[in-house]
Image (cartoon, rainbow, N blue to C red):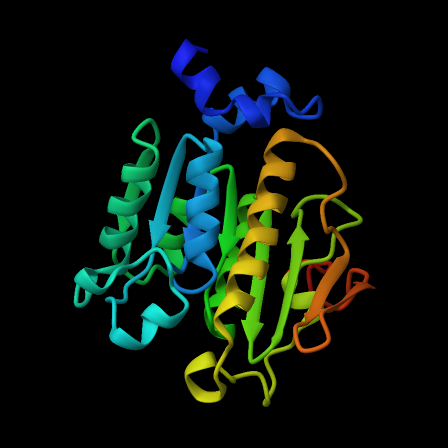
Amino acid sequence: MDEQRLLRYSRQILLPEIDIGGQQRLIESTVAVFGLGGLGSPVALYLAASGVGRLVLVDFDEVELSNLQRQIIHLTADLGRPKVASARDRLLALNPEIIVEAVPQRLADTALDELVQRVDLVVDCTDNFPTRFGLNAACWRARKPLVSGAAIRFEGQVSVYFPGQADSPCYRCLYDDGPGTTETCSQTGVVAPLLGIIGSVQALEVIKVLTGIGEPLKGRLLVLDGLRMEWRNLRFKRDENCPVCGPPRPE
């Protein structure tokens, strides 16, 4: 590691849990961030600042005026631009040493599987259940860790899933695809700083997983009530009947 990198990441390298070895693992890692909105903004900024070597940004949307209340990676001058392009510019301005790949489209099926297969970890910062279920299934097929966050109104949550580990549930174990799971921030609203809090927790979990330190939120759902500023840590187990991670069903 050269002198410039040692200086840039010095405060992180000082941590004995990370040290130079952990920082090098971050530099050599590739992370896909799905959704460059309220959650994806702090996630991408902190991962870039922390030195994750390659970030793959996936979002098909463009920057709108209503986004700027909470999507802090975008500026007023970015209105009308693809979110991934706006985010890429901001991340490279922050840390020109990293590589940022912009994917301005909705991915599904084979294209989604191919992208997930070539990264080390996926961060779900999307805002709808169909996309979340699709990411969960793709990560399970590829055996890639998934860090999932959500925020709405004054409430947020984070969990981490490890496909392939026998004791790890998946996102589908926690949520079914029945009615009542379609609320979005555009329908019910969300307070701006909440996204920063939840996104920062997601970024920290990514760093923990990539460097192998601490205890990730596996089998745990960390829930924040922002109005009371109370955290709850809810444990949940793998669903034996889960259609994604459960045993194969007979034909």
